[in-house]
Image 1 (cartoon, rainbow, N blue to C red):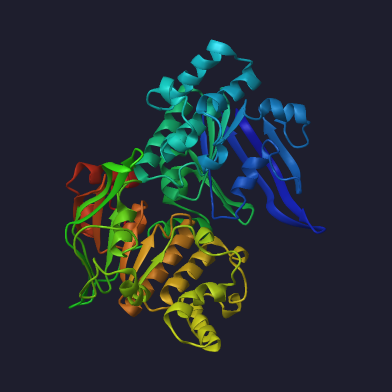
Image 2: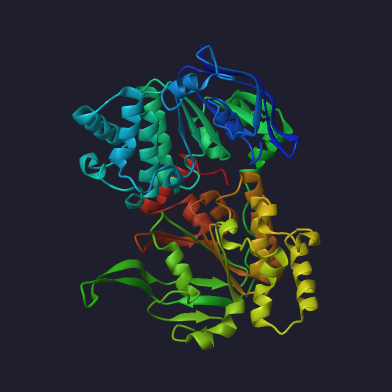
Length: 532
């Protein structure tokens, strides 16, 4: 029997008298006890389809067709019916728990509200149910942690709390919209295992929305592939992956395997070396702010990067990856020698470091957050030229036009603003900003993690091409091990500030020796690691 049955669903958004179609007459069904994954790139209509199920779309949405939940029509249903089903029979888990959890309320209050509203639980009965839910989703010491605020939990723990809230009223259907995108691979694996286990024990159906095909392989019984608001292929997971029928499905699967880097040129010069680098942040307490201890972000890190070489830094959140990279750039304090381009820069003051800044650039994870919304693309990219060169405005625009062509963006983008571009285009703008000064070393801090697989593949190809053209050294930070393998010549594995394993990418991925590295790879690739 179908828990959810969607027939000829059409969704459009009205703006200034015009309706823009987002979903174009799709059919979809979820059987009882089944996990169905909807996959596709951003803008394909995945989330719009899910939100349509209980009429959670913006007021400008125009919806037609049929959505049956256990035989009951949801399209055009009255508010009383929708309120009875929302959060009770159909529950949602969203991508970023920090935007879904209220930062002003403790977990007990947030979970308790749903239990009071839908089940009428009060007092000890409600408190016991809150603790039971937190324990069920693997929150340690639930009696104590129920008094915590969201910011006091890790990303994985916050996502577990979101799952507890979704489970609170025993839903028939759980809709999970990109619930693991922002998580480390080991935490992602734990959340996926938790969802699969809960689906069995709670007798639920699961509609899982993602752009990550690795997640689909791991969790889904059936796959629905969407493109431009239409379903282009559907079938059993194994069938779709082993024999994809549609060209777009094949494109998605091919994008999931993105090759490896070109070899480092013979005789390549060493760009960066560190000797036993240490980054410790003091913990100060009391009226006199005495140092009572340290947060040991990086311990004893000895690294080397040559021209044309990528060093991948992997490990869970808090392992010290970003601290190490920022210390190499002299953006945070560290101990012991740092050599850049043959010069010891560890003790250089701010004034003496400034001429070297053009040779050391950084590309961040979220281009929307790192690009000023008030500046045009030309102003953003030319900012470094303003500081480090004496070029005229006309000459700056010429340089901006050249670098835009190199990152494969049209020059007519120069006078537009960041919000007018897709995520992948914004990341190209961020890369152009870093590359316009022709740096020698670039730190890439999770530059592809927020992007769809096909866009990731394009950005990886771009970064490899730029590295080959300009002999760039990359420090590449990521929790996505497929992308690390695609870009890195050598890999450092970090855990709690320590380098627990290092070697060539082939050694690390094919024959890891440290148990922690083995755990990371198992979480990312499963038992077989030959899919690079």
